[in-house]
Image (tube, rainbow over all chains, first blue to last red; front, side):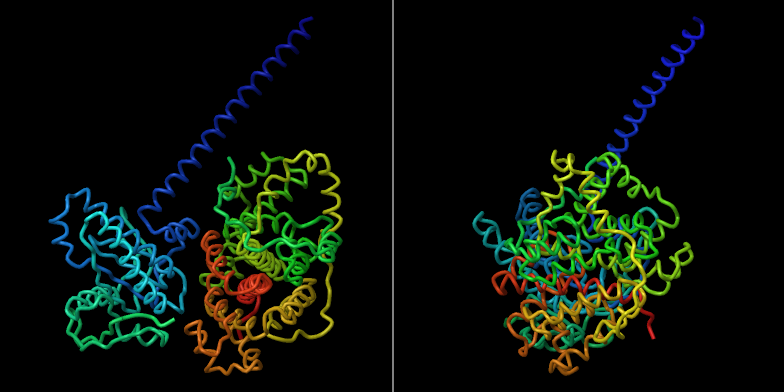
Length: 256
Length: 363
């Protein structure tokens, strides 16, 4: 009798242990699922702050994203007359106008294999050929600049319909070497491209005001472009930080 | 937790399905079961046959264990976000007798990297090779050797990656519908017939045996095929490539140009130099070829070539939604047959360029 009782108790104990184990397993699964959802949410929100393709590259390559020397085409765009615009519009309206602008030009850049690295105030810095090898990076950057012009034209139509002022941009393109990879401090690192190429693209963008055009590119870009891009040579100009005068070309269109 | 791949945005299929009794019976005879992709690819018969003949599980692997090959296939399909191939991999595991919970556990192990050092080394190689930015090379092969893989196993790992890279593109670019496959394992009829289906599939799959090439390989892919001499992979590749090059839908020049663009995008000089003589034989001198490849356009190109060359580069790195959108834009410019064959050629080009970098020693 005592033996039966002991056996029954053992069965009950084992059952209780098994039930506890199952409960623990379910809890672990729930926590794991919660973590996975959290990870996905984190990745989604990351995508809003870093270019999606950079997030993909980081997730897939992890620590392997080491800086490397590359030849990249940099595109620098800036809004013309932003200061006056910012004084005229209420902050919420200004923010809405700017967000709409950034969205339409970013789409134009992404469509042509570029990625937006940084929004600098009202400016945009984008690269072609920094993430993956791209032998057609100059053509892509020039097409992206033309697409930005078109996108802004359409956006201006929408702004005008709301009685808001039109926007105008200046775009500078330059191709050259630099260092691409995860760069920054321990607290804050980002995928970046570092070198004089970026500085010159920014300076060329500033020259658009001087020459009265909206898209300017350097000789290094022109040399790689297909012949159907319509270009107009500008007088060589001095730019800050560069010893020699810089030859630039206004991009007027594409005959395709 | 369901895989995020099951919710990857997927367009309507770009290719209209068509019945081809001869092709359907070929697939059933060779694989034991129908393939849901057959009707969508039937406009280009060699492509349907290639999907069957190049399948690594049909007697093409001699050294590599099947479980590792399946893991590689799953990982490469994840890399490419290929919902269709992912659904195929999952359906095969379910048909082999794994429960949904077991499949999810396996996916969890993959996600949490709960794998052996050997498995990990193979999967790291597979990811690097499928991304190919930059292409894998001697250092990657050396890491596999350190993990205990022999030379033949390394070549077979590379082959599995390249086959899945091929199949992923064939399924993703025209958006072959994955929904039927995703639901298939849970259908009552599948559940009822599962042991029979598993037995039929098992009868058509298994390890291969050594096969010598009947003649020295020729043509632009001779070095890749030659690297597999003694393996059943070599005659399978050779036969598929012969059919692809002789198919009359797109011209040889157009197909060679598509290969050249993919080689250029991947910076695969070996593949680029191998294809140049073929283009020269088609009347395209080196200078003209350089002009075409510099801008992916030139006055000497036909309208079909012009439409396809710009698209070719998009197939190297892509997101499913964007490549499917770009492929849809081609439909007004070329026929369904041309689009289907272009998908096949570009998928082969992507697979072979990656494979060449992985298995052919640079001189």
